[in-house]
Length: 306
Image 1: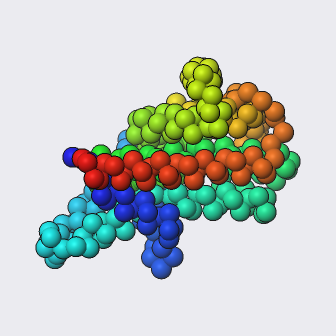
Image 2: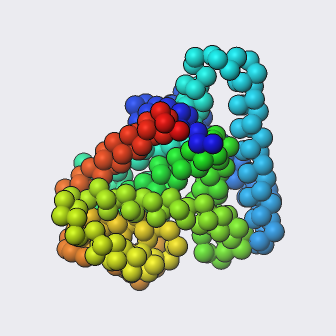
């Protein structure tokens, strides 16, 4: 069973309204729980991290099922606005509008890059700021848009919210640092598994939507470069959308990057110039609008015919 109707409404609601400012976002609530657990129960062990992971997933599933059960119990199945209610709830798992707006703001307000990336941002050049914005946009196009939509479509609201719980865990404790190497290990592995297919779907989608493919003979060389370069990334998934975006824009992303005061020698992704401009950010954001068109068209077809 595909939850095409819920996914279609959820995606439309997110693109039109974005985050609902009058409620505490579910991801923020998940983050609050993670902070509370770390404060009171943290221990440098895989077991303690596993308890955090499974407890958050369990709480998320219980609350999601209770919400859907309550709605379906109070309203008859034939109630016209039932899919709309589910879609509104689903929209909180998708971050398409927020991601687009946040990256677009970097064009006129470069200092805001510090809110989007984990790297050190104090002494970045204009080109490095633009590069960081494009990298985070490409990676989060998968994590914040395609992946939650993928799990929503397959498993409904429980699938989407469990994905967001795991992704939030990974963003808060899934680091290879002395503090989180063991504690966040399970969270990081689960996030890798859940993002495996969506990351590759995002990369293929970016390549297919590239203006370079007006000449169809360029697809296979680009695909070959994607498969060869993406595996150089430390993450088993992030390298795919980042490499695809670099290839589509004709630029080089990656390279030496400073984290927590130390330079990390990251691989390069893409083939082209290393000087990245704000126009490149605009071109990257244009892919988001094309993704919108493809996703909405695809969900509409699934809704009608499946």
